[in-house]
Length: 414
Image 1: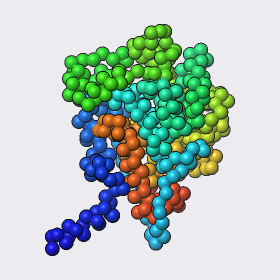
Image 2: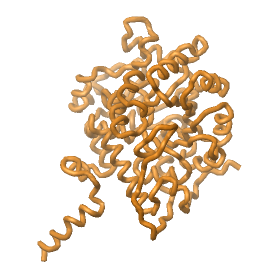
Image 3: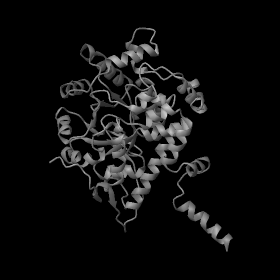
Image 4: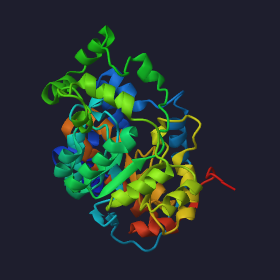
């Protein structure tokens, strides 16, 4: 009897919930089936200061927790009786994407895993998902564009000196590199206080301590990656400092020159200077979304900076419906802040987003698996999205917003 059960169970396991990967990928999926498993492995493999930098928010980490609780509270009602193959493909700003999933910009990503920017760019091109490379990424925008092709987007902070001369030069560089989507960050008007980084001494200029050295020595995989890639640096900024562009000089330039947010007047100037798609990142109020559309932007990225800027901000998912209602069809709605699963992606799409982005999830993938991590997380999120859509009876992304949704904590701006 036991043998009969075993012979029956194996094909059933393959058919139900075992995932679509085979060989080594299937074994890896059994070991790391969720982002929680990936996070535990990353915690063991990267230095403590790096994990704290990735995991922490601002203040008491209330906003990061709020993002998670708010996403968990969104309920979707399945519909049955019309089974059909699930398709996750979508188009964002004329770019065909394998899924409505992208990699968010994370400044100084090389602290989490040396070489992160290049890994993300290569994974984006391979998996056909967008990657918004940051102004403070550890590879230059030209290299990102070469590796990612049309999936390499560019996130821009403002450098107001000399009437934004460096800001406009970065825009020209992005255009010359073939970047098709520019994302201007609005939600960093002042530097936030991040207690974990302060306790770890992770400030500019960085001064390693005995504890830091011990953390690094206890993380051999991270240390090998560092030996291969070299110290993380602000590669986009190096051409704007006096030669030789040492890390200290470049870090000092970043500290003194990157200031504040963009005014709406400057967003309009940016619109005039940029012929590609223009996105504003960090919108949490429908009136700001309407103002952005009035100056000509093509996309609104609803985000609270992943909980890393303002602890009292609402969960990004809770303001998404109001922004979706205000924008209508006048712009593409994107979402980030708290995405940890394909089910979270389905929730955001059901509430009006056209695409979603995650930063921590992909960096945790690097911490857990090194160079394989970004593509693994992209595949995991897509498979989970396919499962969620199949369970919901939604064969296409267009069907998700038609579902009945219970969202008790949706923000009421009236």
